Length: 100
Image (cartoon, rainbow, N blue to C red; front, top):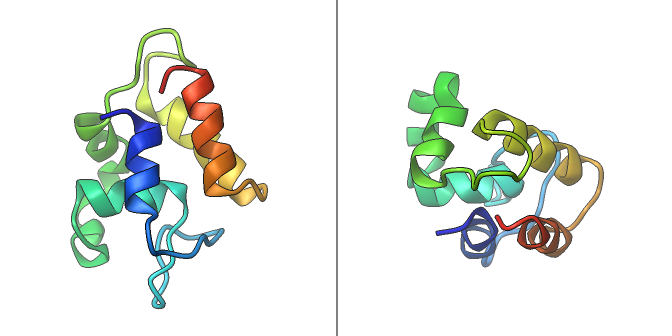
């Protein structure tokens, strides 16, 4: 599954937030949407927090030539776009434009 597809699926029925991966009202940021698919729930997320990039890279490996060879680069770019005010749809469209 591409990262753009993961954000699309993981964000269904959830409102977008900034500054946090999850909130108590069911909101997620773009990375939180991915993690909700990858890890299943916010409670299991706390177990994986120190290895967030590894958890995402396992389920959503970066495509060669996108932003670098590490998931960390891509995650940081997604976080910057999310917290900079881009909608899920804008982030998804950007990811699709770079083959992710």
